[in-house]
Length: 179
Image 1: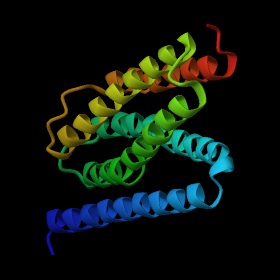
Image 2: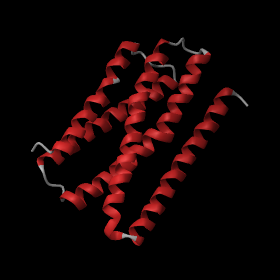
Image 3: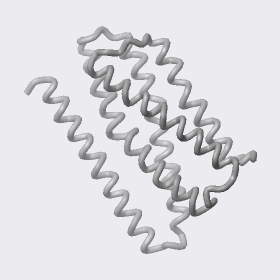
Image 4: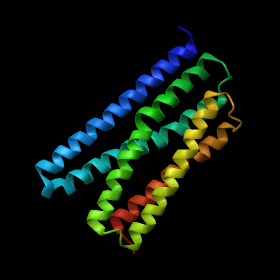
């Protein structure tokens, strides 16, 4: 089996596992809601926080991989290894975690706050910005996979700070609720 075929196969396997994980999470969530609707809010909050942590872990790690990948010679074993790592991180962790974060976050915003409060609107704006960064990183995974990255490692070092800044803003808005 060629290297590209192996990568496609492992990528398909990772995607399948991610889909299965989301389906299992959805089924367990539905069972939890049916079994204990009064206590579901706290469970939803816990699931949301777990998903946020997973999403942020990936969002902080992926640009760091890009720093090293940008320094690797195109076509090298190291470059090919980074391609696999980046694709798997995006498909198996970052994308599913973002979906779960958004689904539970929107439900919590509706159920707990009826989408009201200046802090919540500011938080949603920051999460939209974080989702935009996610989209940029996703497109960058494709560019790296096609050996079309033209950004130097310094660019990726700077990009690596953006999710951190947004995370700090989001946490302050949620905990302090300044307005």
